[in-house]
Length: 130
Image (tube, rainbow, N blue to C red; front, side, top):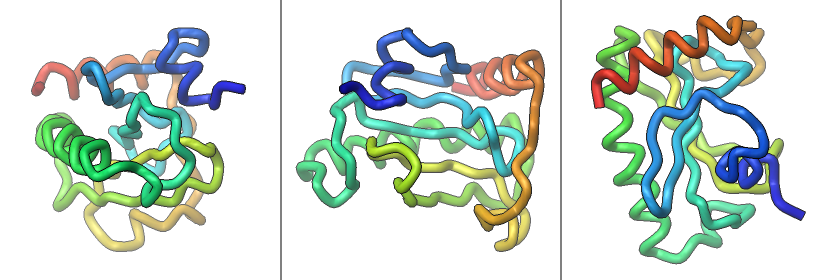
């Protein structure tokens, strides 16, 4: 059965897409830790980052590297944190999270509850810097 993320890639579940190419997809987290919190995934459905082949793993990081400056331009922050947890959805994903202090990356923090309009505006702002 296809993962939630594969269903998003296939357009079965709506998302606020940031960017896509033949192998990778980036979209806003719908329950973000911060405005601009973006998920970057390979289109290849693999459940654990260290099970990716070398080319896909390096390609994932290079794709994320293209997205990162756009997030930072749209959401001013000290740094863009990167996290790989992968327990919730069995599909490799990087979290790109705008942060000003280490505590901003704590997944135990309360999640934001942005409206669809706020997510749409954030996605458009990030895409405008790509």
